[in-house]
Image (cartoon, rainbow, N blue to C red):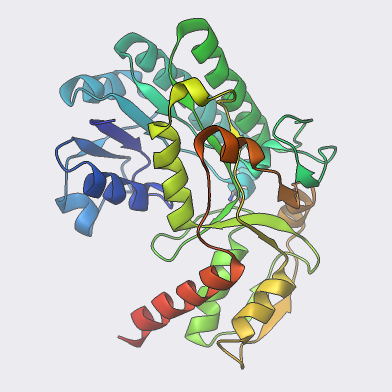
Length: 318
Ligand code: SER
């Protein structure tokens, strides 16, 4: 991995992944791909090349791949689960037509491709506890439909054409840099902003609803470690379960209370998000990722909470 295109570089994952790749590969071209209306700013803009890279525009993508001799594409363009329910055709266009554009370019120009999957690739009849790597995947959401199809199509391009496709199934991602937008797991990010600002948090997900979550430094590590992994060890490819913590809103509230004793939270559940959350696993089994490419997360709920509160408190006290 030397010359990399990150599509969706200004999003929740891309904004941190692009900077980390630029740190780790200083002599490479790490291109921040973005769309109009989501332009890069600050370090992302000044620390390396930036290009408009719309997944639905194959010609534009191919030109960038040629210009920078791209060998690896991180395809992070997606509508998250709740937004995709409101705009299913747009989700299909970005997630599926975008993917086929990227896979065709990768086939032609010999690029490796990482297109993340998600806990959303599972559905109500998937085993909820220790969800296996290989199991029933019959999601009921458009987000889930596109994620299952992404996994299948990515594996198809590997088997049929030898395109080096690899991916993980991300849990809900918690970060303090770029906010997620329109996801079911967003509450686990928003709660910290309310807590640190001294505001009451209105939780859209009911107590007792468990979902896998992950702190962004571990998610970035997964993106990079998997693409650097020895391919001869990979039995699976699209996509690996990865896990590091699983909690419900009560557990997170109690952890935050240890740092902010007057934190207030009440429940006002959102029926769309609750139905989605109810159909997702409580906790995935990530043993294949551990065995095949050495996946090992650093953060659990306690260390993530401490770091989130310290980082955001510093930011908001300035
Ligand atoms: N975080 C995503 C969502 O909530 C799931 O991958 O939509």
